[in-house]
Amino acid sequence: MEENNVFHLAKVLQNTDNARNELHTFLQAMQTRVEQDYLQKIQAAAAMQQADAVEHPPREVTLLRALRAFTDDAGKSRLDEICRSLMLFHTMGQIQQNVAYSLAEGSPLAIRDRSGEESCAPSPQTVRMAGLLMMLSLTDRI
Image 1 (cartoon, rainbow, N blue to C red):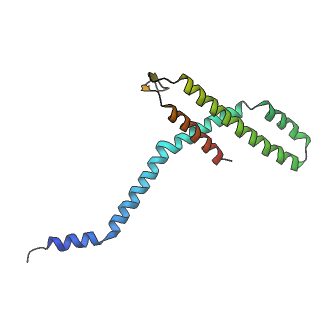
Image 2: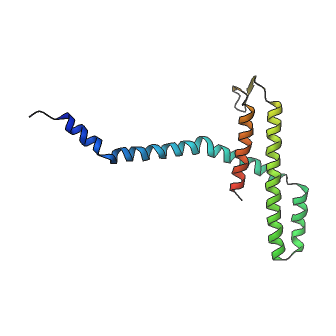
Image 3: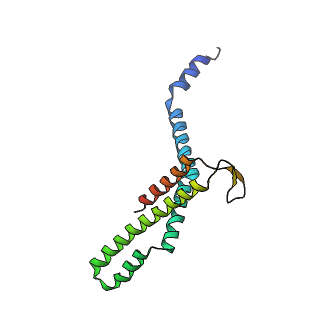
């Protein structure tokens, strides 16, 4: 008896487990790719900006940290919280300055990035979006 191709195809199409597994694998691969290509780079840029702010804190934070030694535990906790907030605002201010600098310096001409490769300057909207994403990444760390 001849093999019934329609019957075998119908069995394959009826089995949704394969499609479900393939869709799950595809979604996991997409999530991993987005994390590697975008999220990790955004978080790394925000962490570098935060490290720079920690290395060069504003005078107000330095003063509050000096006052910390003269308070009780509740006061120390409160001063630490204030310092964290001031550092967040300071870091966000630095990001805004970098965005403004990038917008002022950017041009549609080809530029060299850190890797030495020539590329077109990003659009102003992309520069603003990069700054916003870095700020959002910082707020996630609070």
